[in-house]
Image 1 (tube, helix red, strand yellow):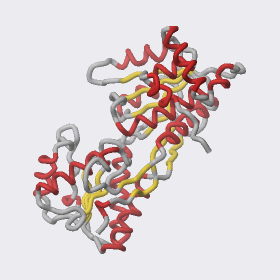
Image 2 (cartoon, rainbow, N blue to C red; image 1 turned 120 degrees about the vertical axis):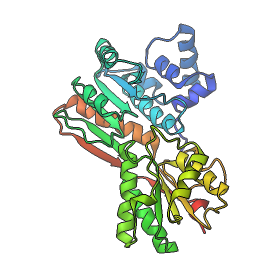
Image 3 (cartoon, helix red, strand yellow; image 1 turned 30 degrees about the horizontal axis):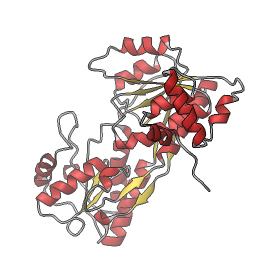
Image 4 (cartoon, rainbow, N blue to C red; image 1 turned 30 degrees about the vertical axis):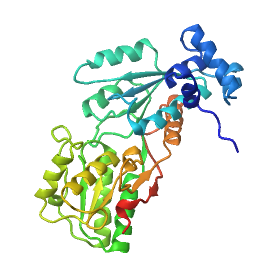
Amino acid sequence: MKKAVTIKEIAEQLNLSRNTVAKALNGQYVPEKTRELVLKKAQEMKYKSLNLHRIETGSKKYRILLLSGKPLNNMNYFVTLIEGIENYCFENNYELFQYTYNDNKIPFQEVSNYISNLKIDGIVAIECFNKDFICKLLNLGKPVCFNDFSASEIKTEKSYDIISANDAQAISSMVQILHTKYKITRFSFVGDNRHCRSFHDRYYGMLTGVLTVGAAHSKSEDILCSDLSFNYGNPDAIKTEILKLKYRPECFICCNDFVARRVCNALKDLNVKVPENAMVVGFDNVSDAVAMSPGITTFSIDKEFLGQETMRLLIQRIKTPSIPSRMVTVNTTCIPRDSTNR
C-alpha cells in the first residue's frame, strides 16, 4: 500500500516550513500566492485530507495551543511528534497555534493573555517541567495534555493528562536482558533524574531491574548531576565524572541518546572499548544513536502516533472536562545496536 502524503513532504517539495503549509491547508492566514501554491501542490501529490478539508461539515473547530518550554524546531525528537499533532489538527479542521515560553524572560501574564485573547480551547504542553509554571497553567482552567511531565510532585485539584513512553518498564527489561545474556551486574545511570518525569522513570527502571536480578547498587555509582550546573553535552565533563566513580560500570544506562553518544566519546578518550569493556544504552532512537560508531542500543517510540494520541486525549478532555487526571504510556521498541553487542 502506498504511504499517505504528509504535510512535511508537501513542505519539502515547496521549500516551505511545515507550519506555513499547515496554515495554508487549514484556511489560516498566509499570503494568497503561497496558499495557491500549497493547494496546487497538495492536489498534485494527492494529499489524502485535501477533499475532507474542502467539504468540511461544520463540526466544532477547536483552537489548540502547542505550548513549549524551549524552542523545538531543531530538536530531532520533536519533528515527527509535532507533525503528528499538526496532521491531526488539520484532518479535524482544528486551528493550531504555537507559543514558546521562557520563564526567565517572559512573565506568565503574557502567556495567560495570549491564551485568553486567542480563545484557546485546549493546550498541548511539551518540555514544560517547571513546577510553578505547571501550577499557574492549570489554574487557568483550560484542558491540558502534557507530553512528559515534571519529576516533582504537583499538588493541585485541577485535572489534566500526561502521555509518555513506558520508560521504567523498558529500561528494567533491558537491565534484566543484559544481566541474563552477559552476566553484567554493575550498572550506572547517566543524566539528571530530576530534569523530568521520563528521566526519573528511566532511572527508576534501572534500579528496579538491578533489584530484580539481585545485583548490588549504590547511588554513588551513578552520574546524576543537575543539568542546571552540569554540561551533559561535554564529553570531557562526563569523563571527569566517570573517573570519580569507585568502580568502573559494566553498562551505562543513559537518560537519552544525546547523553549516550557523549558517554561513548568520553569512554573512547579513556581507552575503554564499547561494548567490549563497557556497554552503553540510550533512549529515543534519534540521530545521535546512529550518527557515529558504535551505533547505540536504544528504544524507539512511534513519535507521530504519540503526537496524534496526545491530541486524542486532549480532545476527550475538552469535551468532558470532569474526567479524572490520566497517565497514559505508549509502548517502545528496543533497537539493539553495537553498543551492547559483544
